Length: 120
Image (cartoon, rainbow, N blue to C red; front, side, top):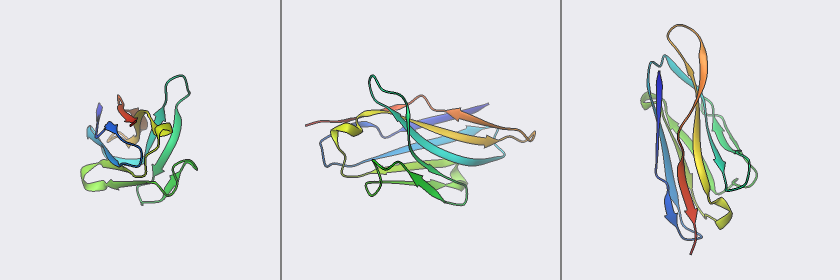
């Protein structure tokens, strides 16, 4: 099994910054694609950013230039640096990780989410 532990959410004023972390542990051979998603109240879950094992990144248009996704492959950990936060960034943020298991199959796992609230 694989466990994902997210941290770093909280309350921040507009224009502020937060850094989210997502650490994967368990029966992992390697971690492939990692990504952050978010879901605001009453809305569908949406992609925020993804990063491949080689470091290629992809961002939603709404966060380009403000958010930076990164990862530490040695620690199977992913980060999301969020700057210039806006009230519309308020949401539960979820990490999603594609894990290649020792037995040769891959599977996506979701974290439980961490709440980010941007408000004055």
